[in-house]
Amino acid sequence: MNAQLNHSLATAPNYPDKTAVHFAAQIVADGYYGGEKSNEVFFLYPSDVLASQHDFAFNGWGKDFTKPQSETKWNDVFVWPSTLDNPGIPVDAGVVFLPEKTPVDPETGSKYASEVKVVDGEEKRVMIEDEKLVSAFVEWAQNLTDESPATMALKEYEQKRNYWKEQDQQRSCIDVFRQEMIKLSFCEEAADDLGTDVFVEWMGMGKLHWQEDIAFEEAMQRLLKKSGANWKRAENTISTREYWKVYFEQHPEQKPKHLVFYDGTPTTAIHEFQTRHNIGQADTSKKEGDLLGFDERHVLDMREDPRANRGYDELVATAHRIIEEHYRTKE
Image (tube, rainbow, N blue to C red; front, side):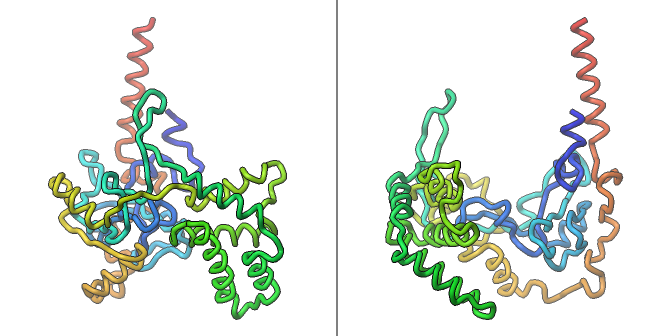
């Protein structure tokens, strides 16, 4: 119990970390905590709504609601409820964003194909690996020569690499890799991700098969799985808007009060939403400060501040009582 409550490899103390609801400020942190790419479901909450009603802390160096942290991995705002009676943040206090055009399985809402299997005695839905694409990629990697388009593109990139033109040169090189993946029948999204991963691996390690203790085929399969391009895509798809329309008709009690369908990347969708509705025009931070005037709600020390540790003493006392009662009955 002591380990669960008090010990953590993270920078934040364990109990406040686990009892908080976590948010990112001014961005959507889909790169760290997202679901399926292009099929992200996320929530937007006004900072002043959260800060006025809940205690909060910033895990990064910056203590600022008006802009993201300098590093995305530190963009972690801890929010705690005022009481333990309802330890959550109401969905309807914010806006739910759902993807609009992603082709998905009409039954699951996933862009990937899946099937129900018995795993460890229980029925579970599992994703299906596309064996044809896996084999095609491994064969492509095995057959690379000095005259292969990918090899020639990488060689040209290395020879002509220029600091001022590097981004454009890199994009051109990756595009060759992407086209190679499309020729293998990967869809465009998978080809983008896989092409980029192959480029990064090849450039970073000097060759694709650099792990001498791993067989070539296994190494290529690992590379393929990094991008998720090994998974079979759903067939007979419908758009995500259609999927959610049907879902909410069947489950009207789960339909959010504020709902937006978006296209593009999550953070871009947020910025477009803000612009479209003139959100942020009345910037109070110049007058109220980076915490929007809610400094009294700001928890500076998560280890010592009781607001970040609500319920801790009660939990420990309950655990001790249960342990004592259990072992007392054993005597």
